[in-house]
Length: 248
Image (cartoon, rainbow, N blue to C red):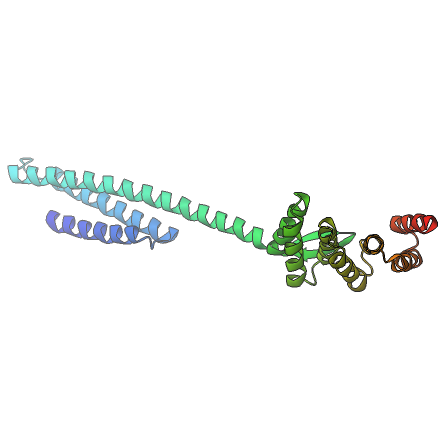
């Protein structure tokens, strides 16, 4: 009986260990396996103790004593393995929770977020935000050539972005910073044409006039300033345009 009980217990433990090492337990299954193993250990211990206590003449043979000691050693070994398995399951459960917490945090970073630009609110993807921020950082650092390339790529990739008007405007400024007035004018004209309601449009027209003046296209510059005053009369750019017209 004792040997058969030991054999059954060993098989149960081996099966449990195989599953645990394969990492396929969920929390409920792991708990059930541990409880089952504990029950078998306790039953085996109780059975051996009962057999010894119920010995009719209270005389125990050497063979039975040896069997008892071996069984108790096996129980101690199984209990040690049980503790190891419980610890491994605890660690695995914590790792799983940490993994899902980290995954959730990463996914949240990728989710679109609401931003406000020039009084308007829109949803912006993280990749879109990163692209715009990187381009503007290049501009701030004085890498105007790199900024021009990045801003141009941004407008092409995100034409409907809430940052599109600003990106187009700063593209013109990036060209102007390189003394490339022709491309600066083209970029700023795109702001005026595509984003007439943008707060950047009056400034874009002022920049166009500045570039036209540098290119000696004085008449074109005057027309641009006049159009600016007419279309956006209550802006700071319009006041500057009036001052320039008065000086011409």
